[in-house]
Image (cartoon, rainbow, N blue to C red):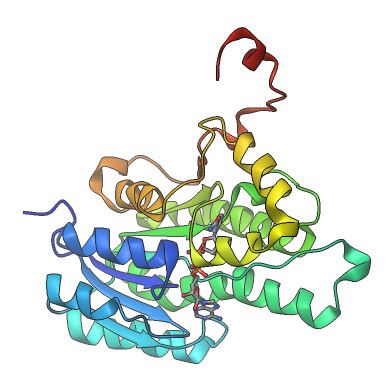
Length: 262
Ligand SMILES: NC(=O)c1ccc[n+]([C@@H]2O[C@H](COP(=O)([O-])OP(=O)(O)OC[C@H]3O[C@@H](n4cnc5c(N)ncnc54)[C@H](O)[C@@H]3O)[C@@H](O)[C@H]2O)c1
């Protein structure tokens, strides 16, 4: 028996990278997964085969009505909603004076407003049940600023505080809310940001800021999301948990390399 047996879970961003890895891990642990994404994935059938009863729907996290309909369909089919994982997100950045206003709005709307709309859609059910776990996907860039990251970083810092606020507001009705703050994880989003020769030097510097000196894998974020959905985390709420290979532990300048720690 899986350790998430029967837990009904909505996962946004289910079509790729971290969200897809969460769907696979949750399904393997016995959860009932309802995945949601702008676009279909050719891997959805694989998850459905491993866990019959899994549902996937296409839609936009910026569409509040569509998210309410998804929550209503989930409730109708499965009778409850135990877990929400908000992994839908987009990259974006640049220094402020170079960011067009529409680009600023796009990143905020998907990353921050989308998270708010996903939570808003499931909260009435979780309040009624007096239980639930909401797991947002923020970023290390929501914890620390980084050059060239303004709009993305602002959206992810917003997700971190929204998460903590929801933990405060809903703790007394039995709902836990936590953020996962991944380091740089090898996904299609990461590959699009790091593409091209011009980014090679930056990519290497970023890799070395991870104290494990490597990028993460989507499955490593799914592992943290598994913990936060499981009863093992029953006393964990209001946290922004960095799953980042030590990225936010402090600065690395390489002095210990001279002492043989390579
Ligand atoms: N990959 C990293 O290095 C990294 C690091 C920190 C945080 N994150 C965050 O993790 C989350 C997942 O990122 P990923 O790396 O797996 O990216 P990804 O691009 O592989 O997957 C993101 C998914 O979100 C979906 N999506 C985008 N906009 C949407 C919308 N409006 N409505 C519905 N779905 C939408 C995309 O279609 C895609 O399938 C994002 O929030 C991202 O900001 C990623």
